[in-house]
Length: 336
Ligand SMILES: Cc1cc2nc3c(=O)[nH]c(=O)nc-3n(C[C@H](O)[C@H](O)[C@H](O)COP(=O)(O)OP(=O)(O)OC[C@H]3O[C@@H](n4cnc5c(N)ncnc54)[C@H](O)[C@@H]3O)c2cc1C
Image (cartoon, rainbow, N blue to C red):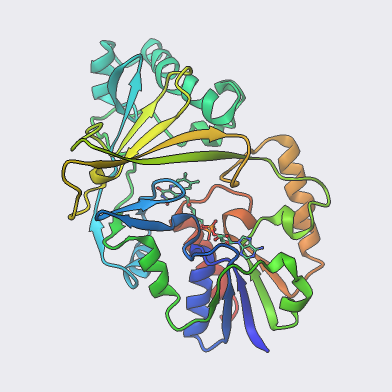
């Protein structure tokens, strides 16, 4: 019998596992995929660390979280910069004073309207399969218009990339902790429950209850990664494609993430296509799903041996620092 079974070896599970182990609890982690690190998982392609589930940049304003992740990886300073392409022309993004200059308009309501049409209307319709005015304000508000020349994608105090990728970082977080890959908790809940006093679950909440009330809605993505025989494909780490008729939403070019070892005469890019089906990435926060989530969350109180968290368990879009903060709070609540 162990103290904690942790379901999911993403950042949420790995943080809980580390903290509980460090305070003397016995812990086992199970993971249904064939690898650790959850959606931050990356692989070394010719010296660049390529994320399998979309580009990940670490950013936080919390000194505590920054110090926590720096225990497991050396972070290289990196500030993410994105550009946006509209009708074949490239603009500074997120919209800032340079963007106003580029569209030849002075800041004000008319220019803001134009910026919404150029950069948000098509992109958002592709990403969410619904027009801009039907997308929740929390999503649209994530990318503001700035009245400065600051073109950094994130404005947090601490920003960077782990020098040898996230997979290596999570490997260090899990050092000395037993991890069983290709192991699905839901395929035998009773068996796993019998092994531990408590279970911490970071998988999808609806799946935990056999989709009893229906499936929670998500938008997904499809990624196409390829090596091209050119030195420099697009001149920036991320280029957003905001025209509705272009099927992908953005292209990552990994060498612009600044890895010190880089392929010469070739470059690796990933095209990101929005999709209705596939891995659950972005929760669709409409009335139906909000109500559904509340019904599932209520069922949790019937299971005192189970704690649920992470982006899937909480049915929330969390950045990496937010998920670590949630895990630290949950794990420390076990002994404080
Ligand atoms: C395209 C994209 C880009 C992103 N970019 C950034 C970024 O730049 N910066 C940032 O801070 N955040 C970013 N994020 C958010 C980041 O991915 C999440 O914050 C983080 O992955 C959440 O960690 P987690 O452990 O909660 O979930 P996950 O990483 O999804 O880990 C959960 C794990 O649980 C496993 N699991 C699920 N069910 C079971 C089961 N039944 N049995 C066993 N195992 C199970 C899963 O296989 C998975 O490995 C991005 C997200 C997306 C979708």
